[in-house]
Length: 124
Image: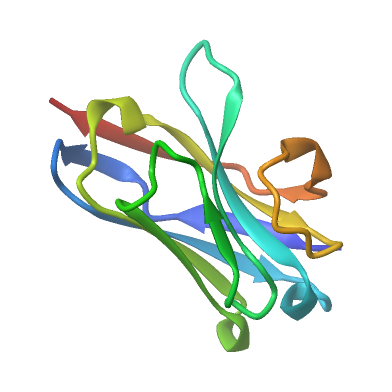
């Protein structure tokens, strides 16, 4: 069982930056892939980024590539999402998720554990 808690959301102006954090607990954290997803009001939950167990493999949605960076600190059981050059269309609730089979994928159905989400609002 993996328990996830996100933090770091807030209100920021367009062009600004935020760093989201995800604290994970559970005995298998070091072997699982960790992803970030987001859901805007009235829309489906979309993939943002994923990182494998070692941190050496990452994958991003085209919409955030070059602006967002995912990273992890396995010793601290933490995953981060550094978001730069934020746009109003990045406004959403951001969720941290864990894929216990370690798959580097953007398919939400392959993720077994989810956090409660943190709100990110980008004003124009």
